[in-house]
Image (cartoon, rainbow, N blue to C red; front, side, top):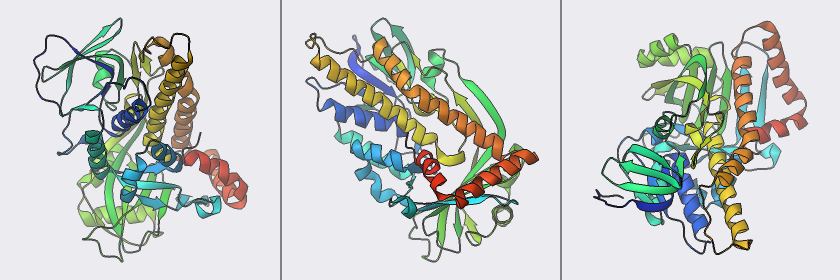
Length: 420
């Protein structure tokens, strides 16, 4: 961890990552692993504004679903083996449209795999990732805030609030939806307001979850339930789920403030009894649901990844998984660039990791995946929150077709599992 410095010259690093939550921490560890194979190790700095020992906004009480494809990439990076003890397997997914005939299931066993994904609580995940960072070659500045950025011809000058000055060839913004880097560099985003608010909480039922996850579409938006591990205070006959409930802003505010019995009764009425009876709910938080994205998530010697590049509606649980594919995409572009440089006639010249060529290779590599995912998410939100009868009929027939024609499930499942 960093200490306050008084400097006359900036500390030179190859890559400076701003933001140490899921995307930033994973990228830093991936770069450290890549660095092990290079003739000259990369100098990597990770800058995180919030202490991991306190309530970290990037590693809060929420749980996320890590898709099968993401598990594969995290395993390849050597990260998942450190995290797998925290995971709860999703073996089955049930999708339904409340009040209509449409429903279908995705089953890991039918697809020949052990699990469609894993549910991990962010707070636990953050502690493990920072423990791994402490063992790595990454220089971690935490807590430390970026107070000034100066774009220069050969990199960025980064001033931290403790007086530390860094100079990096490549700056990576992984600092979330309200990216300080994006604001300081004057980069805009496109936004779509879905006029929905998510209420997020952990809930308990009187029946074991048996590794089922649920997505139930309602008039106000989807209700998602992800299976979670039990705790010492949770009897074995009960089950915990991570709940994400999309509502109108007014209804979300009302239910966030409602007493426990009223909230559980409303949830029961909206979701039904497929998981049994809801018997408890933990702390409730809420946030507005928008789709925000940068059409070009690159700038002069700067790459934007994860929520700094795009934030998604939680429908289908693709936010983290898309962000991880940003990270993996950048790592692959850099790996290929180092390999090509080593094989070139100018191998003695060090690779410039912030060059325009590398940034545009990254942009090209990520374009199709980002575009299709953003389009699919908007389509799902619009299509499943719309009560116009052609939409209702179409989506319910689609769900039924998946149940009637099992071969159709595989391509749908591959997208849901994060395979591109």
